Image (tube, rainbow, N blue to C red):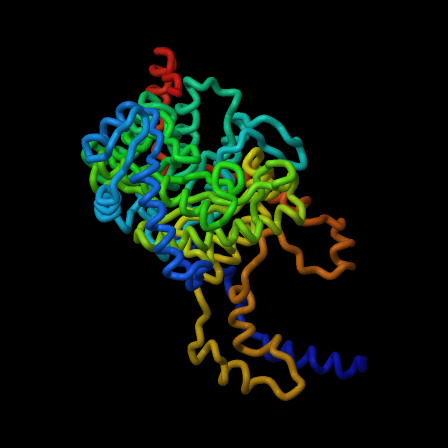
Length: 516
């Protein structure tokens, strides 16, 4: 290269940039997102109608096995035919439930800017949840602990794109009769996002509601009027609603709190081996649970949901991020739109480590949810081993992808300034460059997404910096967050003291053992 020519270009660039004030770092808001993608279909309208009709026929003629006597009585009073623990639900009951269930739900967090709207078209991410184990590159794989739960909550709170808290990892070193005190205190004191409450029997649920109500400084009427928390309700496929889950549906509906109904239908195991058959079963089970909430309290907030994928027919192990998982998510979206209700879908991975397989599976599962029009995507970050483990590094690498999706939700602008005839196109001669154009200088610090863990350096620069791969970089990111994050300013110290006093009193009384 001619050095005189290069020096000349540098002098011209310096003249153009003199007096230009660098733009400030970009600010982002990933909290209130709308899905920018038009939902796609995997089945025709006629096929979806046939699946819906078959689901209604299944509830009418085959029925649901319901193990909670109180739930059976509620179904009976609502007009269902009862034969022992088998409940046969008429389509008129289902249609009435769909009609009364709210199509838009405003979920209240600790501060108004954290509130969420659950409705078709909105987009909400929740990180991986319910795992008995945690893993990271520093401490390895281990049973979930109280420390893991607190650290996971810090990571969840830190990232704006994770808009709601999750049950994360099970704190197995906390006794089960006291565990709900710990999880509620952790969520409320380390975050101001929309919290999760386990459905593990009426005593624990009631006490969790009391803690949350008082911590939010709400009266009973105010608390019952709007959802301040949510739970996940899993039917036991095929066609069974067990005692804790049925009780959870009743307790949450009575108190006006939100249930996310989630049949877990694995094709070839707990569901038919075909996508059409599995989604039909999932649809029937979801409708039965939604019907129960509306019989208890018409208008109770409830989300339609599914978690349908296939098993590995060689081992029987769950598989996620497969083409079948993708198709099932899209089909579930078609069924959900029949109801008009906000709905839940899921990503996730069956990989045992945060490797290429984990990334591939999570992203294909994620895109299935996105193209299906899912309202809330569960297990969007951190989930490994089909839910047996959450990975700290995977939380970080998955959040990178979620941030990029959030960037797409904002769309693209094409104003006169964006098109840039005056401040870009007319400023650069043929064969020139746009590095020093006024438009570039005004926007270079704010225009592009700033990666969290991705590294765009060339091989030489990457080597000089230590040759750290994405997992190693992710380790440094989560360590920095866990070690340096501080609780939100909105946390009230007096309410924290009152909460701790409540927990101490209830603990001395023996806590509340979970019901089975």
